[in-house]
Image 1 (cartoon, rainbow, N blue to C red):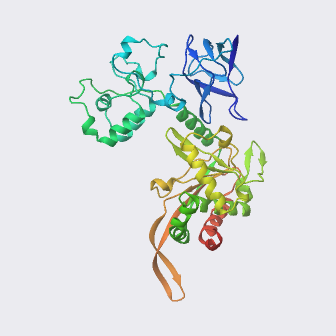
Image 2 (image 1 turned 60 degrees about the vertical axis):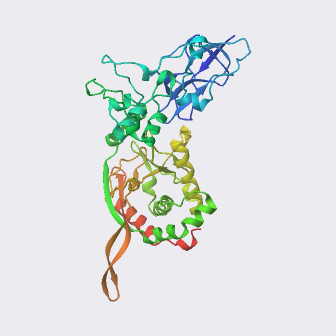
Length: 421
């Protein structure tokens, strides 16, 4: 019996997906629920299991093809008895780091399946190995040269150098694993294909700049009470909740209150139509290995402070584990970008469409501040931060944007920390 493999719909608004990698080729045996391919949408990448066990008889689309949902992409022949996965690695191992069997057994016992070719095993005309984009990204970030990278032992299929290999190399000491003699291959400029997520981010950011009339205003806020509260309750909160108390929920709470005072900031523009949103669905920018995603916390106005803490922690962890579903990456009405965690004082973030505004949070730093007292001015040390608001001037005037940011500052500086927890 022939079973059609259908391009799945991974989210309500997802209409197509990109074939990233086929894990099987025509003629390969496959068990039910074994990973058949990896697909990507404009939100997330997902591994797709086989709907039946049998033999892959036909792959109807190629890697990098963009395919509409509910399209037949492959066919599997099955007699109803799915083969057992007795010697196959588990899904997580197969996803990234599957070592080859070494030694005599490889010669005496031929493999049951022909291993599929991988991009990382291809050679350029100069004879250099092409590494996966993730490996190249780590190498570039850590200053690992091409010659040095070539000397790292690979544990992946056919000796492929994996992320774990590079991280283990860095942890154990680069000198110990470096090649005895540098490669004689001359270094040249490397031209690589932009990763799919980076392409999507580029398109999204360019579209936003082409669509919205961006304006930015900046204010500073005294968040000393917030900082002292976190320091005071840090250990107790960690014991009770099992995760650290961070600044992000404070900023979300202040933004929600400021939006209730200035609801136009939470609206979106569609042509000449203004859509006023009843709920405050907060998009939180999260940096991940491949780039940046913005998972959404819906109906923030219905959550208390502890609820916000739990939701922020949950989406941050799942985003970095690539466990966020496509539906959790849409529906935001306002967004926050906390670039202060990287030490940046302030920035001018691009609006996350179709939002009309985005708040940028700078680093919290202690600074000497002039403080007015009944006895005169005094210089005091306070924890300060810069807040930048990017807004769409087509919908929000300068007065509206400035007033909203002022209310955010007001709620941060006059927060009733006693009733928070």
